[in-house]
Image 1 (cartoon, one colour):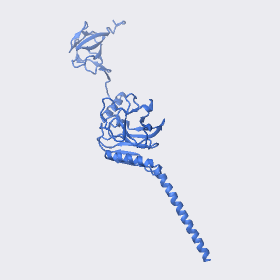
Image 2: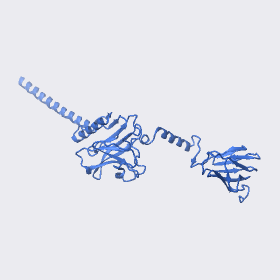
Image 3: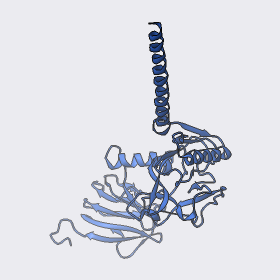
Image 4: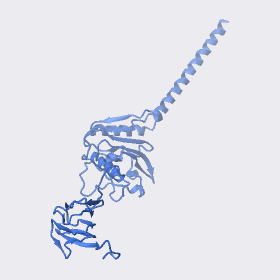
Length: 337
């Protein structure tokens, strides 16, 4: 009886050991899956170019291991002034996404602006190096070039890296300015296209990349003006849209008067055209009264020296002088004459 009990206890111990081993194996498998796919979205902060390059090297080394524990981070917080955008080797990182975030307040138009650097691992053959591409209606593989723009700022070389610049002829679909703004974020995905490896820009904080705070404010104000939410005067090369109703017997023309309607009753009326108005400025005057409007402030050339009664005339400033010509010589006549 005692022997049978001992046999049972031995069997239970063996089962416990087997189950424990199985649990350890399952636990290791879960850890491997977690390292590969379930890691938290970590942001790594770099405070210098050397720290940045060290992180890039670490990411490539981990990815080249090709085992479950190859995750380093998915966001790089670039926290130093005049900092570049640098990406690891796209061939090594294929299938992964990486966001680059500039958190330093002194990033505006630094020495590395206008391009994105890609670091290439020594194991990656040159024919596999595709660079950086942007989406759009143009050929996606022709959106960047390694040739710096003419008359642009100099771009320092970074060891082991190639700089890629948006092509000037590629329309509005590629960023014209990269990193020339404060606290911008660009998100990339490492892809393989036609036998080469690229970083594809999949998201960008475009407003921060292209607009300053002042420019953004101006754009918002323009939207409000067009929507009629605020008062405004539309100008196009000095031509102004609104019509001005005037009854004063002595008034001056401003650059906000493209259409003037005079509805006064005075027998003598003076309209001053100041010399500050630019050459080429034109405005139309509709005289609804029974009296002529006399011009002053600039010499008048040609035979017409005033705005006749009940008429519509155009006035143009040309070479410092005024030229007056009829639009409708008589608004009461069926022929306009």
